[in-house]
Figure 1 (cartoon, rainbow, N blue to C red):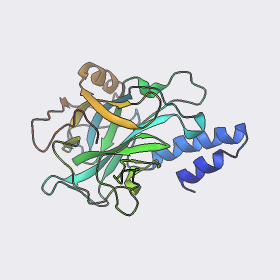
Figure 2 (figure 1 turned 90 degrees about the vertical axis):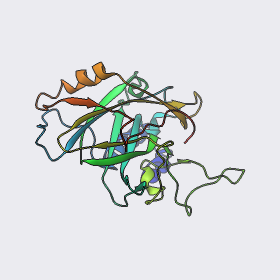
Figure 3 (figure 1 turned 45 degrees about the vertical axis):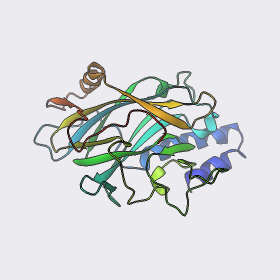
Figure 4 (figure 1 turned 30 degrees about the vertical axis):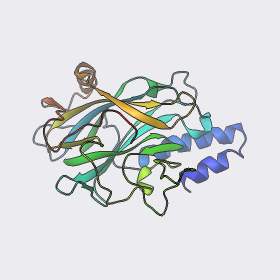
Length: 249
């Protein structure tokens, strides 16, 4: 069953069934790509063959859709080749997920949340972000599946949890138009905080803001007592790293 099946069928379910569908949405989004938040018991030091990435995320307005679509917000990252500036088909991926329970009055994704992830070393691009029912993509779509608006232009949003289903697996990235970073084995890298700006009446993402809060990142990292090493803060001036500041993807 796909996420679209879950959403379509949940509309015909009684309240209890819709609640189950909401939980399925949250489970699905955390399992669709790479690693998510590292366990608190994770052991890591500079001799590790993996890397630690810290990233803060939030959105500017609460989710507007009903609970049946799931209360969570995710960002999706995929490996790219710094030489060709193309995504690596079947390459490494990871996802950050900020979720609020269906009975929670607080929509957690509207507050800055720092995720701590153990990832494979390499160069990564932000390829998508959004809520379970609506993900915005930041690289070229597959031409066969990319929907068009009434002016014949390809739309950047797709109704899917995992945007990799709709992006070109060899899509080009742009140093001036995409959020890119690289991380080495044994490194602890804080890449900053990304706030996604969305319309107050719609869950589609229109642009993003970038900032840094090292104190918040260090406070969260302190909750992982077995992670040791020096936290390095993202520097977009060092190639192949860059950061997309504002504008529509």
